[in-house]
Structures are given as structure tokens and as C-alpha cells.
Amino acid sequence: MRKKIVAGNWKMNKTFDDAYELVEKIADELEKIATPEMNVVVCPPFPFLEMCGDMSQESFFAVGAQDVSEHESGAYTGEVSAAMLASMEIDYCIVGHSERRAYHNESNEAIANKVKQLLANDISPIFCCGEKLPEREADKQFEVVEKQISEGLFGLTAEEFANIVIAYEPVWAIGTGKTATPQQAQEMHAFIRSLIAKKYGKAVADDTTILYGGSCNAKNAKELFANPDVDGGLIGGASLKAEDFLTIVKARI
Ligand code: PGA
Image 1 (cartoon, rainbow, N blue to C red):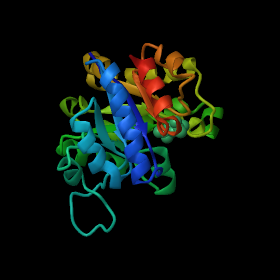
Image 2: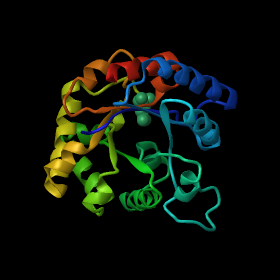
Image 3: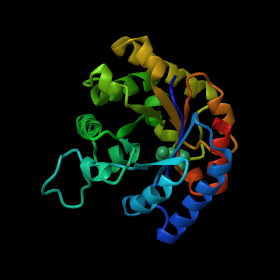
């Protein structure tokens, strides 16, 4: 059975005290509502990983990083390796987010390398994919997502692939307040699952968690999560307020 996950991508927000307050509120509420089927992941900026990791030890959430180096170690100033994350008990890491693809020119090849680094260190990649607005307007969304997934992930063995979480995040929906309709999300998620089934077989496809991201919020989460192929969400803006994030978590239970 595939996991249901709600993950909060804090992006470059919060200072230490704000981050502490947010994660403390999340931890307190999860104590009351957590179920074994529910997986909550918090993805703070690098400087707060240790604090969040410590808090997670006594709580019902896991911690993810927002990015990782494609290199193993060495002279890469400013980079953070998968081994460093693993040594801090980080369980997940977002890779290939559209903001990294756009502002840091991350290629599918670089993202594939990051995925390999993470898997070698027992960290589950949350692999982001999604089309830009002109691509959707030209009805190229399936082509774009297929290329991102096949170049970013399909070099893996079926055994390696079992650790992958996919996040479909249409770029036109991220931070815009313009959410994909539940039909658009379901259609793309079913398409992604069919690609996985073609490559690795139905059992692997059925076990793969596919999250939706892009202006998913406390109001629309339930309707999005009601779709059979939408297994949860990767939440940006709405993960910065404990009440909103927890409402989304409850929508997934
Ligand atoms: P958003 O961001 O929820 O603010 O649209 C989602 C994401 O970028 O992961």
C-alpha cells in the first residue's frame, strides 16, 4: 500500500525562532491526531534541519531537506551532500523543484545525479515535475512531464525506484493561487502512474506515492486529495502557518 504524505516546503522563509514556533505547534497537534497511515514531512531551510530533526525524534513527523548536491563530497563551496543529510537523520529531500530548475538551471541530468546521491544514503527523494503555463496552453504537459520523469528517474532499478516519491507541481500553480482543478491533477497523476507501470510494472506503480503541489491550501486540499491517484500534497505557502498546514494534514487522514 502506498503512503499518504503531506509535506511542507518552507522554501526560504522563517528565522530560527519562527521556525521553532511553527514546528512546535505542528508537533503538539500531531500528538493528538497522528495515525500510523499518515506521514507528515517538514522541509525547512538547511540551518533549521538539526532543530527540526531533534523535535521530530519525539514527534510524529519526519524531516526533509529542500535540495542536495549532485556530488558526493569535496570542493563545492556552499553545497550540502546527501551523506551530511543522512548523518543528521533526514528521511526525505525535495529534488528538481521548479524554482531550482528555473533559478539554478538544474538539468534533468543533474537532478538524476541528486536522486542517486540520496538513494545511496537511504534518503527518499521527493522528485518534482510539472509543466509551465505556455506548455499547458500548447497541450504539451504530458510530453514535458514524461521527459522530466524518464530523464530524471528511469535510470533507476525497480528496487531503487521503490524509494521515490513524486510531486506533480504545475509551475503555473506554484505560489500563484491558481490551483490545478481536481480533474487536471487526477489526469496527470494517472498519467504519471501509467508511465511508471509501463517502465516498472503495475505493482511498483500502485505503490508509488504521487503528491500534488501548487497553491494547495486549507480550502482546496480535501477536494484534491479525494482523487484516487492523488496521494497527498507538497505544500508551499500554506505550510508556513501551523493552522493551515494542519488543516491540510487532516484533509489527508
Ligand atoms: P505553493 O508551493 O503551495 O506555495 O504553491 C508549492 C511548492 O512550490 O512546493
